Length: 331
Image 1 (cartoon, one colour):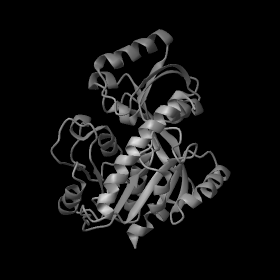
Image 2 (image 1 turned 90 degrees about the vertical axis):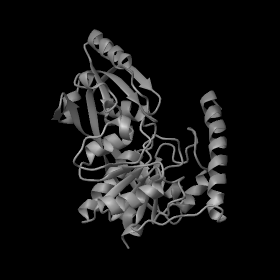
Image 3 (image 1 turned 120 degrees about the vertical axis):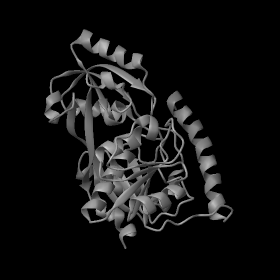
């Protein structure tokens, strides 16, 4: 066992114990589960970040809209600077300081979907129904949030490590049994999808399973939205603060970009001006471009953001459909 695996195992033991204890409080009736006035779809994982929850939240919101519904997203706004509840609608641009990096990204990607940022997700559900007329609620990062009842409980796993053996884990793999849906993300083709589904089936026997891949849909540079082929053959300096930066680097390689330097930071990193300036300086020396993610670009100082390129991504089904995941909340 490598030192990375040892650290992951130690971190997993602590997190699993804490989350198991919290869940028992609700199972034994010592804490109250609250029901929203409309169906709730939870999106979460058992690993600590980096599986693709945010693209799935966006995909499910778009699917609900396509089906004629009016969804809203509930999120706690991890590491945001403001603490008071916030309702983000299509008539305002929200900053990451107000909402958090992932809600700010979702607000940019889904301008017609209301987003309620509130650490009290039960209160946020009331706000979304009362003030945004939501017909369905998508609970972001909700698999370990038991206070709000959910009609669909969807878990995202990485096809290369579906039981999170190699990263810190929030809950034991056995907890996948309570999922109503499982998304196996980052599969290469249908044959790989079928193999992982068959292997994972006994862990989540009652779940609808689909397989997806994260696909770049556009390159953004200086306010322009360009085709992904723009990066082919281009030298790039990668700047990212993600739970799974290797997947982003791999995506750039698939686009034909030539990675000359990596500036990788912890997940949800708050960029200092010097972080960005150092990356830009390296890029100029290498004749390269600094490339980052949609989650990161919202935290870059506005006067420097135009000098960076960021990649817009979306979740593409390889096997199954998003509607299958939503069925428990559509009945």
